[in-house]
Image (cartoon, rainbow, N blue to C red; front, top):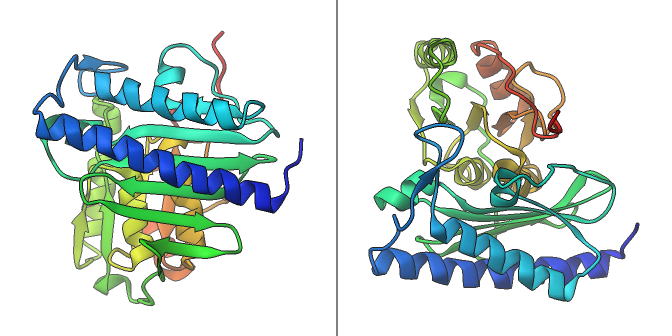
Length: 285
């Protein structure tokens, strides 16, 4: 199935509008202090979902279905409820209603509404709305990346000793995985680099790379809905995407490095302990 590029812009404009509506719902939950309403756990005791996550995803999907009834969806909460996670050739909306649910539950102010749009298994545009900050990040292949309409450009730093690196610890508490995470972190810190940061949101960490305030973000264990929207924002700001092995990125592999350039990416990748979680496109047996 094919769509015209003007039609894709119409879809992107719709995503921006529905992301803003989603942000209003998130801010209302924060202001009403009901952000932890009906907190549940998913794959582990620290992998959280709230009633607001589910309501925001429903808002986005229902809105898109009315306007684009033939399009497909990959949504975090839908997949958690048993829907397949399949990136087909058809136009597909890849949705994380609240990237940073743990932040949301605790009132830590970095929460992203993420909407990516893929055609022929390639992400064409992405929208990441930092709901608490009220910042709208957008990127479209061949059209640039922006924050609230201002063009984004990655950092020009090539000296690994002068960079800030972003990463997260994830929700997997398997001791072997935790050991690999900390061995990687120790090697990155002792290069040394200027510092290591983490916003608690994969998408907002990647947007920080696009902003030029962070040179590199890496993580293993994230999902396609965490990174799809931000992936095109990074590349359109001049950055690069790689696998933690140094190979080409595969958004379904649950491993990613987003960097300002290949020089920095290569130096950090050399420090990383590589491991492979189950892929996002692994169908139930």
